[in-house]
Length: 272
Image 1 (cartoon, rainbow, N blue to C red):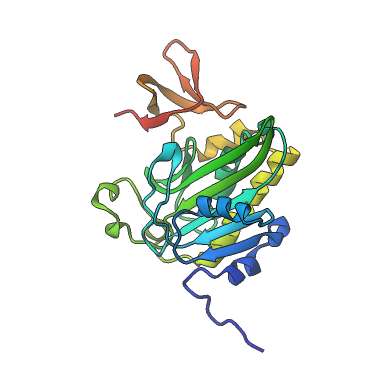
Image 2: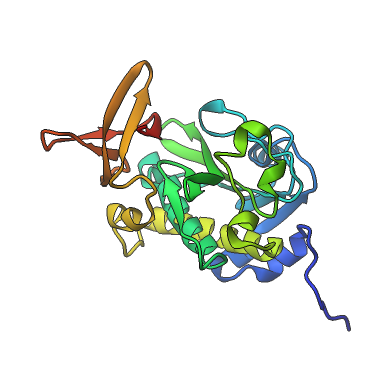
């Protein structure tokens, strides 16, 4: 027989599956060395007739995208890009908190690889460390009348890339887990743990099995809590002190008069 003495430094679907545990162990993993977008490929696979759930994994995207249709820098082959497609066929309300819960479970999973650093979530879908972004999440759904036909959860993680090689405009605002931890992380093990976290969040939402309340789980991981922020909604700016989220997932901004304003969508930045 053969024995693996050292894990390869590149993504390998067989190794990802080997490290998967729990219900996620049944997840089919498709690997593409280079791809336009893992979310787009997930949608294509469904159109080809592939049965869900399944995951798309890549270490380089050419047309990565983020929230609000923005481009996501993903040219480095040292990073990790994952998408998981589910076909729940349930009312959309059951998964309205899915992205937030996935952020919580993924942040906790990645924290185990970087015990000396504090990983946090910036509402609603970015992962940060010391004010710099190292991962972004994007959830896309398709509806059939009042039923959620399919939902794709994608995440891009700056894993083993060197931030000094990022585009100049990103070097002061982005980082990587390699820079945070001080050494490279095992990409296949990390991929498996992230896929498990996504699957756990999904199962918890559709079966309403979570033992935690969303606002309470969010607070310790929030990068904004207690800080003055500004939310941009169209042409309107709303300022306040970030004070957690409510049960619907809206960001709460405390006002000087003691009231709070819920922010359900929009860009949020720290007030300078």
